Image 1 (cartoon, helix red, strand yellow):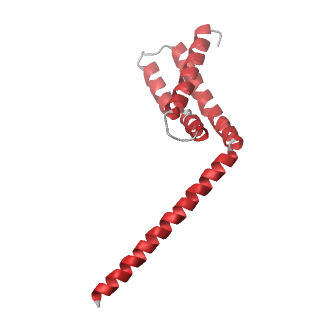
Image 2: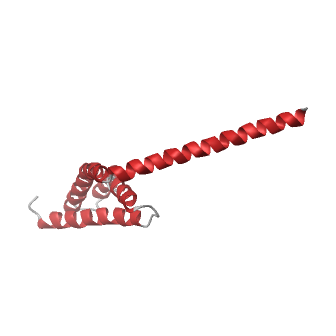
Image 3: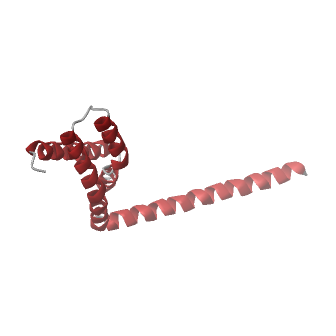
Length: 130
């Protein structure tokens, strides 16, 4: 914990991890709150990173300082991201409630169209049998 390289590496990798996920989500054609939610939700991908970090350490690719920095990044992103996501949903709750309502309304409209088409098809096929 006293090696300054570990802290520098940790902060650099943490910044890269967060910015890359948020940047990736920013290219989506969705409203900004949705893009932020997706970006925040992509940040905690620690289980895979932890496996690769251990493989790198055990094979000699990473030294203990790099491994320690990677484990710190994985731990922080895994623990902090759900907190940020909860805060985000609280901040934009009205936006998400409105989106859910509009999606539900659209689903009901589509299901009514499908039902109408099915009834029409049944009715038309009944005529053809007579």
